[in-house]
Image (cartoon, one colour):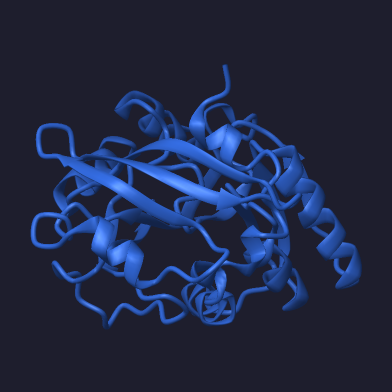
Length: 253
């Protein structure tokens, strides 16, 4: 039986590209470039690349990018978009928990949850971080987003998601945040690429900053910065607060 996140992305590529939460690509890539000092010689791995929006934009800017994802449908869309944009990106069908790379990339990005936070156990989420650490060169930089557990302590996730929903786009209901596990259980409804409505029971892991710091330090990362993640406006100037649904993490060996 497919996991909820596998079923979600089985036929949800074109519709995914229409969602509001994917509209910040340009500003997010501006931040990535700044973090990498605009060094076009650096090799970048995009984990959970989806339909390739960050990978393709970075390739347009002259970077050598490899994108990996668990969804073949998302990868097919990414390859099509790269061809339409006349850029070369290597897209590979891989599980983020079992990446085959060893010290091959100068930077890894994992944005818009990119696999992390979606796994059904904490151990599986940690396996993703382990895979990333192995894939990175030393020195190397890891830029990713994660769901911020400070947010649901003060706000309703269901109300937050409803506030950003649009007709014909993904909706979330029956959200229940478990204070013992920091997991949010909800029912996601999407319209797939064939116009069919699909309901899925999602289970997503939220993290507090201290957990992220501890996990990364256990893998050898030393310089760790955690900030508020704002759509299309990533910045080290945005202090993480209880108002941020996501956190932006920048870590270095």
